[in-house]
Image (cartoon, rainbow, N blue to C red):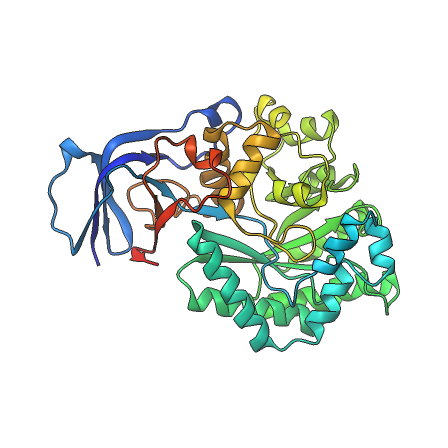
Length: 409
């Protein structure tokens, strides 16, 4: 179905060249066409421009967007969306003052989610994940990454990734998958034996079934060391899984440096970094991905977005949607947190969550901006006064329509 959207108050992040990630001061420059129109044909962006240049193409459906803005859909490049059950009990424990370590001793944390997932069928996991996916689509997400990491056995890690593959096959949203067997050490196996299992058994089997595009490791004190991370990522690369890393969430762990050394697509979290880590990123193509939802939920310090941008680096924003530390995939809320807590401008936050997110999933040629030929994944707001109003009105449901692959969701 062809769709013509007319009288758009502002067409946001129009772009004729998506070959370079947006970095540093350029992130504050958000291209917007006022009083615009957008033509979608065969699931892709056919044409856009000012209303007075409208060629009056025929379309099956014409939408009047008076007073409304049209954005490219968000690209959420870091989630753990496939999981079994919630962990609000731990949420209450945190409110009462228990530390992460104390909660873990009570059987909480990642191992809690792993135990639940091991006892949950693939069908149940699929149904619950599909409901979450439909919810995040309604808040503007048009592409998403889904990690494993709550299985911690070969079969359960593969079960998670099979669910993600089913979601990819049944949904209009674009999905990339990541193997995260190195998320934690299970309680019933020695550390070195589990690491060998990840390297010698899990990675070959995951790659053999084509279940993942990326390999991730939680490089953090108490989880996986830089040397262990390097070994796992190098094995993943041998099997065609590109590296990503959970880095420096709780401590300065060496995760940034090993990520850059291994050529990671992105290093994610970065709540704990200093100048050495920033300098390391400046000399690389590795993308810093910030997850303010986790810092908010855990009441931690936020990643230093301003320092990263001032250093000329690109920044990406993602939700980290998971049951333990970021139980929300609402990207408009992530924009608000980025602006309020990390002092990013609305323009920077929008770019970080769209075109830069697309680069973090290697989707920049297909998604992330309003560009002729790209997949028509866009959303239209309700009537709002400005682009700045979108992150300003935190928690408000401002999205009126989502279009994925040229179809109204």
